[in-house]
Length: 251
Image 1: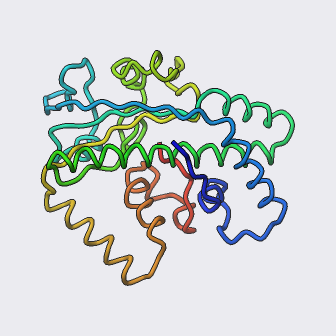
Image 2: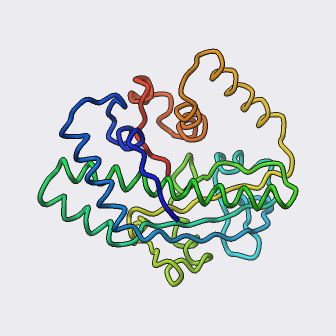
């Protein structure tokens, strides 16, 4: 799977204007993009599970996993099934980031931003693949991917997710004792299957389309805020969002 590393996305993760004119930074981004593509070993997997609501949260049937929190309950309110996915760029990317941390802070930051862009691009493709399967099965839509740590969904479910997917054996993805994914440029996420859209999803999409039409803003920026920022606990007080930029914390 070829992963596209878009310069504008790299600049977003660097919290820099997409119109940056700094020739040196632009050169370093170009070099890092080429280098990281040679190091990436993108691997992923996913599984579908039925779910049911109980007094403890959302039970993922056939497993010992229960998803707890108001945010994930709302996210899956119109779903009776979900996909759990995991993806990683591999360990060589981590090693190169660690190397650059020792020799150049600037290169390290740029390489890290390129790696984040790459893993998100990979996850976008996996999400697209899942969506095609869901629609082909006669369903109406999927939710966006929702990762441990979003909203009030605890990060402590990482190891259970990896165990369910057999990710350590299949793609070499593990978690530390603090539930941080290893390799670090990796993602786990939950995607709900929507058999039929409820009124809330339809209204949300109509509102988003209205903003795009009225303000002529970039579609990806609007989708980012709608799909990710609004689930962040810092949403109301975020200084970056007020400036029209984003931290890049997409999972």
